[in-house]
Amino acid sequence: MTSTENPRVGVRARTRSAILRAAATVLAHDRNAPLSMVAEAAAVGRSTLHRYFPEREELLAATYQEALSEIGRAMDEAAVEEGPALEAMRRVVAAHVEAGDWVTFAFGDTANEAFDDAPSGTDPEPAILTDLVKRGQREGAFDPDADPNWVVQVLWALVFTGLERAERGHMPRHSVAPTVVRTLERGIGVRG
Image 1 (cartoon, rainbow, N blue to C red):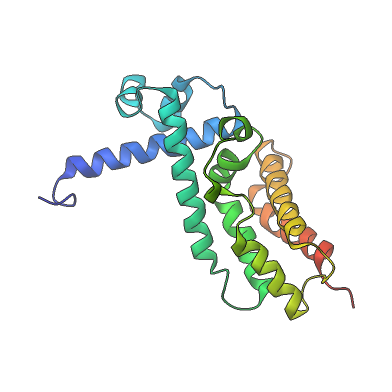
Image 2 (tube, rainbow, N blue to C red):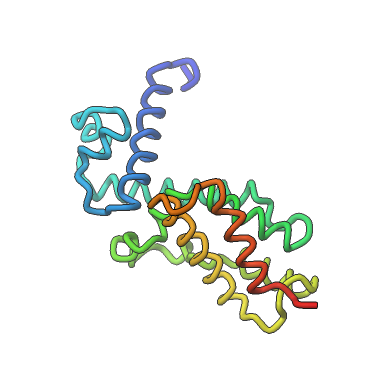
């Protein structure tokens, strides 16, 4: 019997997914939040959460891995290597804003201590982004004197700031991506 034929497998996967999504949302903003808050956000009981993740560290590790997967999917959907670099950068920003809680959980301030020993493949400056900046420089869209690593760090800072401002109610969530893009383009764009 395959997993599509067994409804219990589907329910189990959906429950696990709901717990991980809730953990990313709750723990992205307060790494010390009680697991009862995660259970409540996932609309499951604490005993259910503990059946899936008996220890807090197991939940954190699984949520971190799921965050990396979700961010990877967002990057795939952004089609970074397609079209002009400027358009690709806009798609990258939109994808990261869309994956907001996953991004904040994996790379935000509260994640720094928890994942200091993360595998090297989880570098927040993936080569695909620095390559995108270099491509934009070659195309004449981005300032050729800007250090690509610096630009990627600025991108992350703008995305985090936008997500944080939206979370605190200082700006609507739908305006984060356009604000980040506008700020980024004015900062790294070639002036004519």
